[in-house]
Length: 113
Image 1 (cartoon, rainbow, N blue to C red):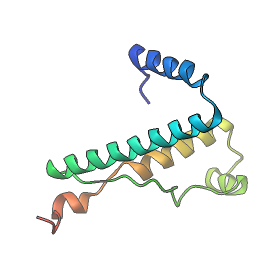
Image 2: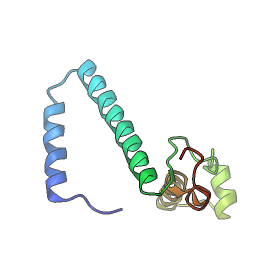
Image 3: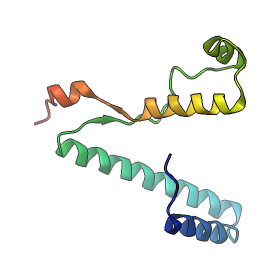
């Protein structure tokens, strides 16, 4: 994953400082508002992608391939993975599950036209 720019780091630090002044209810409202904006951005991205002839499947759901227990991870790796290996594996599952390009949609198009 790419590092944040200095400007992004500055903005995050400013948000952190501002959040320290909020009470629990205000923090919950701010968190929900940020998720709402995230969903709106996702919808806008998908709309513009479709208009440009691209189609993505960006699911919020957990990957069905994600292991549920340490025993599952041991079966996958063949040994007990380190914490770093586990984190890398889970990140790769998440990235593969959330950023798949729907090749059928690209090749076949949609019936909505």
